Amino acid sequence: MAERSFAKEVLKLKIGAGEEFRGEGILAITKALLQCGVGYVVGYQGAPISHLMDVLTDANDILAELGVHFRQKRFVVLTA
View 1 (cartoon, rainbow, N blue to C red):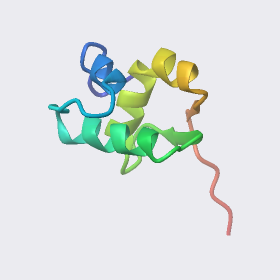
View 2 (cartoon, rainbow, N blue to C red):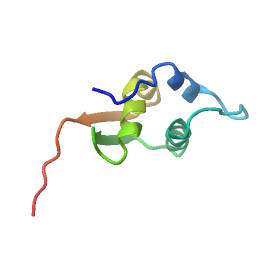
View 3 (tube, helix red, strand yellow):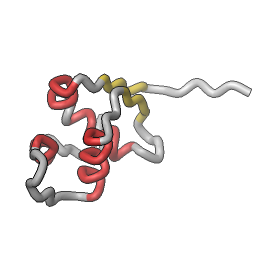
């Protein structure tokens, strides 16, 4: 379950070149990643980037339109 919902705010990720972006820092980071051409993101809840995972979960439809693949894992396997 997401720590916080960004369902309404993710629509700001669709703004185009020349338009002013106003929003929370994590949304600005997400917008920057998309503008830089990121194509695949994976993470898990509780990770240091868990708020980014919340934003990406809520923006999954937008990501799909842009060809970005997002996967949220429920656990992480650590090996020695």
